[in-house]
Amino acid sequence: MSTLVSQTVDVLDCYEGRDAAITFTLYICCFLSGFYPRKSNLHRSLQRIFKRLEDCRVVLRLYDDITILRDSLTYELRPGERNWIVRILKCLHYLSWLAYYPSEHISWLGEMKMIDIDSKLWEFYTNFFWSAALLTSALW
Image 1: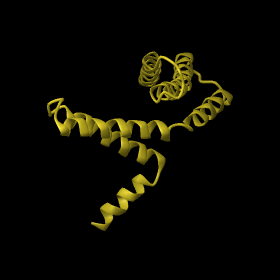
Image 2: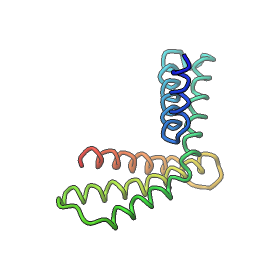
Image 3: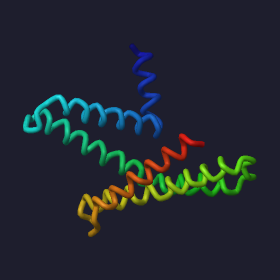
């Protein structure tokens, strides 16, 4: 039992582990809420937990902009790829992530009514850039 606890602490002790645990939990809440009628208390409670965990992930990622910028700059400073298709896909991948993080933050700030923007439009941009990053990653 102590090994399980130790392994769990090791996973949660790093940023990626926390992010994965929060993501797993929020998707489980979303999935489980689908089994209950929309007007039930359990459905609404699970949806509230989902929304709060989603907000938590955005807050945890507020500083990822700097990390992705560093990764992009260090990639560009390395010697070039031999395969130009791979190089283009990697550049598009990094550009997608560079656009994703700020658009996610802007969308979230709009949802929180901290800035006056069309948060649905920015949510579309966020999903577009996220999808583009996943697609370019899969293709390369």
